[in-house]
Length: 382
Image (cartoon, rainbow, N blue to C red; front, side, top):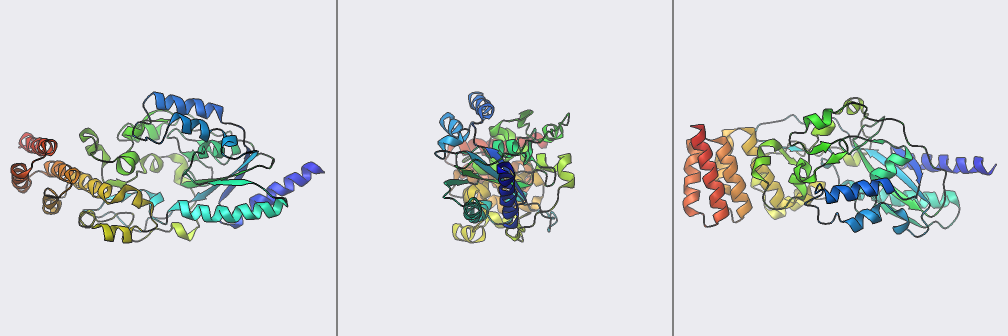
């Protein structure tokens, strides 16, 4: 009788979670994720998390031990929300690409608001004062570990959680409770022998199944990395200016993924393939207005302009020469260096003229080196 009552409670919790907009709701225990902790510590020590100063060994231990995040933690409710949308814009010349997850409203605020409502509903269902803590990819919580152990999905070789219905196009959230609930079982699915995501990553960032070298990932390069992008990686980035979906686009599981339903994740016009020249001309006030409530704010204006220079250099359209030439005299050394690289990629007499003028005016030795390298590349093409 007690077991049946417990099962009824879990089913009611899941049903209420789905009524609040969560596509997937599963439950697991708050036991530590010891294997995940060990693997994450190894990644740090192997240098695969270089560039993320906040991803420390102390944080890894905390994120894999829910009891350190909530006193008396006993259960974790793992939720998933699909953000997959049909593309509403076709690719255009002088345009870049933005990862699908960033084309709507920032998921942190959307999921947190719904999780707070869910927390209140869960307390009402359990009929007692429940202590909880909410996480949406912004604190020391192993969201993928909770999703995997609860059976919400399985770990893909690109380190994304894959679900049978929505593929990897999902946002994850967690509600930790100090109440014991009946846990769901993990899925028995795996990626089998498939290595398409590994084979198709242009920078080779997936260095082994389930291991991503952060410093090579295009998402890291376009969002987290501040300053100059390593020159040898720029040609491999294509026209991605915020994030990258390549390893998800090629995944066979994602080919049959269902579309998302939440209106907050509808694509904003101009967000999937933004005009790169317009980005070069943005000022801070306009950037803040255009990307209000958008994940793209994370790159900051400086990062987005830098990324636009790289994308213009890679897309091969000589119409970009004139706007790039103006950036050669920007106050930011990072912009000047990336614009010079892009002009070197585009080539032609106009690019050479602007580069030579910039070389004569440039006082920063590092940027002079970038300009000279771009000019040398032009000679090699001649």
